Length: 324
Ligand code: GLV
Ligand code: MG
Image (cartoon, rainbow, N blue to C red; front, side, top):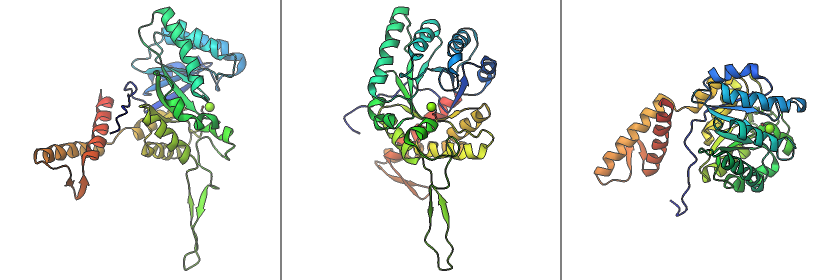
């Protein structure tokens, strides 16, 4: 390990993160009853300008009066380039800060953006005498945000997670997309012809680089990387495939822009029973190896060593968190 310690964000389940427009309070009850680990009530892009003030009121009322159970509750504020943002923070934190766990900051571009919101939230918390500190989730969804993702990730003690906002990221980078979070057939490789002249097309994942870069910045700063939206909620297979790609790269969760996507996210982002069983066997085998003075042994014909212990511990810990 490096001499530089990485402080981990508070451990929270973040397999599914359900987006709910603050202007549609009729959807709140269903969100509260859902199995989403995190619910974010939106004041930003799902809310029309004329509805912003009412959406704030709906969110404050819902946070104070509804039973959200053990869910982690977040509010997505408007961007720092809008005049809505200061009142989002002031009204929501002043009037509902006790039940609010996280603030989601969209289109964050620089570490100074994080600093500005941190300063505002700190003043409100201190003035109100809140004991609990509200955490931050940042949406990395602009070219600027991606360029500065490392500094953003380390910009505040409140930081808990980074989210890949694929829709705005596509707009910002002028990527050619078809559906939100989907893949584009033009991002593919045409193989050279085989002897019989046939050629195959292999579709690629155009989001790979962005997601991988965000995962590294998040993990290097002890934060949870979370994949963003998949727009076609009538395509569960497409959603599952996107979620699996994110999980393979190290993401802990994915957004659900529709309640039907919550179970899909929870399923993909939870370790399977087989994985947990194997992880436990690895830990047992390595414990036995230690008593025999060995650092590496074989299990089922494969090498395992101290790195396997760390991977297995992460899996077992995650399974415990889910069970709890
Ligand atoms: C989310 O906010 C996105 O732009 O994808
Ligand atoms: Mg966005």
